[in-house]
Length: 290
Image (cartoon, rainbow, N blue to C red; front, side, top):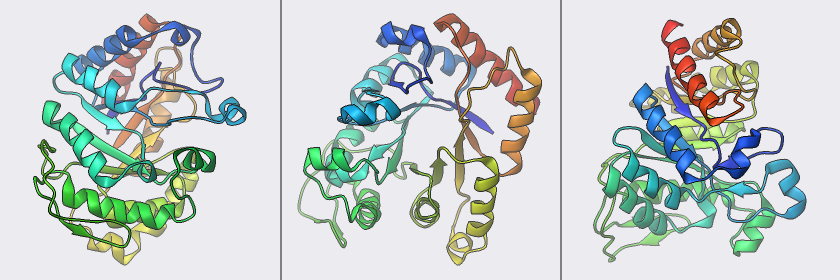
């Protein structure tokens, strides 16, 4: 089981961030990225929201750094750790806009993971002037369009919502088969991952519920048709404390392993940047022992 970092500072959820993050900036994020890379972490994450309604911010938080700008900086400060959008909302972008912008980032670093989702914040869709009701079908088609476009100079695609040909997209991604992960918490998001993607990255689901959903998915024809295993990228909802509660952390890691987790997006208890970095080291040691 590989570890990824739910990068502090970049997203601040109410009640789920430490006081030091409020005044932190890119220098602190860079330290996290460099140390996580040194420790052998697989990836860093950065989420996307353009604007959060004031009344919704109390639940979802209001701080969301832009992944393209943030990863552009971190790509120049690291060499091996992968950079995972977690997640881009497909409906906010034309697939060719993603192919060009994030393809350019991949050209720079060759380490991009494209985590995507269909979105759920209707007010944000309205703000951006994009359709909300058909976001699921539109998102499925966008994934097909991305598969056709990400590593192609002259991509061609004809789907249910997107169609293009005769345009040059240069630069484009260097990864011929860039990993695409699907975020979400529904059975449909899992089905979308099984049918169209390389990984499923759910959130806010209990381990028992995940096990049930995965058991059902593994019994489907779509799962049997897959040519390679589906990565399962989970996130511990309650921050772990490997320095303070090593036995509990080991128990949780064992539970994640038993349901087939291949990667864990780590959230840890921390009271300062230095404490956070110490916890990252302890977490990597804990997973090596399980």
